[in-house]
Amino acid sequence: MRVIFMGTPEFSVPVLEALAARHEIVAVYSQPPRPAGRGKALRPSPVQAKAEALGLPVRHPLNFKSEEERVAFAALDADIAVVVAYGLILPQAVLDAPRHGCLNIHASLLPRWRGAAPIHRAIMAGDAETGVCIMQMEAGLDTGPVLLRAALPIGATETTGELHDRLSALGARLITEALEQLPGLVPEVQPEVGVTYAAKIDKAEAKIDWARPAADLVHHINGLSPFPGAWTEIAGERVKLLRAELIAGQGAPGQVLGGFDIACGAGALRVLMAQREGKRPMPSADVLKGLSLPATLQAEGR
View (tube, rainbow, N blue to C red):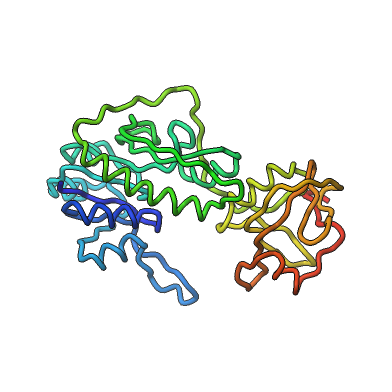
């Protein structure tokens, strides 16, 4: 098929590779290069870098408001457009231009977790499973009918980074199956019951409140790992906690029970991975070789 690919972050790269191996990619759309690093030099997105390595033409319009951009998109004469974490809202004229429309690879089991951060939110909410949906795009936010879906269990201490990689691989496999089965797939209209929205992660969410139940904080820590990283202050230093598990134990919120075991508002957790300022992530035992924990970590508002 003649395919337009639209994506930006690392999550989208395996999908591009899978499609390029089987179909003709007539153009790749990605967000423009952004300043990055200490020198703030312009850095292409992971998708742009991969597309250029594959010898594929790349376009990065700021938006599709101009008639010129919409006409250029339609002129590609594509059978399908595949969109995965692209980062721009597509107007109806763009959605309608390819012969089979635009398909979106969404990293949740729709209608749960529509929106910007479905992987983070699934772990942070303590969901037992998540997955990938191949959705026919329409004007609403992730409201289109679903053509294919596949579920994955979420591990007890799985982080967003790990789940991200598993869902990316699943998305690449599922979109390949979807294109092979077009146009025979029957669209499944999303139910109204069970709709939730995955709001963009706000860095203000990352500070740990030890007065919360341990089960909630385990999901919070694992869901914000590796980025932006849930954190607590220890001896004036902001330390990121990057993996945790639930353990038996109790005490005052923030009380250190031994090692990196911390009492919470209800129950206790064990920090398995952490990262000090200016250091790389390390197992908690290694972190504690150079960091002494106080008797109690400060709870929010104390």
